[in-house]
Length: 214
Image (cartoon, rainbow, N blue to C red; front, top):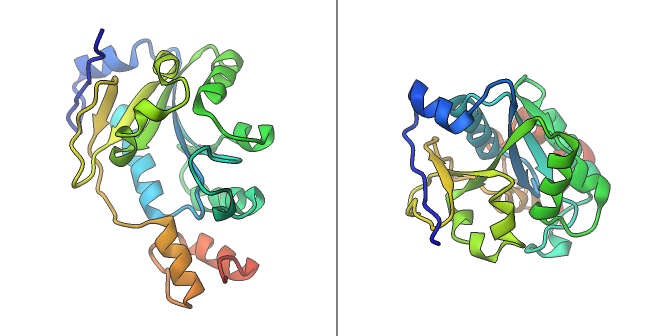
């Protein structure tokens, strides 16, 4: 049976919000996974918009240990990525960290992570946040047909990507900032400014630790 995509408007009606979020006695928690090498302003805007538009209790940034589809040599040690995330989210009470993949180590498969989190927090409904570009890769995700039974995927629209998929994705609109971690690393290596591309606290941390110089 073909899965049906779900589309929404930026501001949810009360009826639609109730239908999507269900019983508010259950915690509604967003999961925003990634390498965050480094975290940047675009990540923060995306998470804030999803959390507010869906009325989530928290949005947790979940850095991976070893991502399954990224060059293992591309990411700096998890210690630095976690500390930059902690600095970046310090001013937003809706934001939090989820470090289970870092603590587990090894390749970070979202299915294994969500099985763990659902067993640990059976009173919580999870909303897995991904960019529109990642939606096209969902068919390649490890055990995707089982994963969609554990979480509600939330896709953030962006120019150039059609919000359409056979998987059940809840779409939201958010201001799209064309910022990438790759571009930030290149700018740091070249001695160029990254001000406003990352929070000041993250820029200061990168400078203090001498990250991305090579």
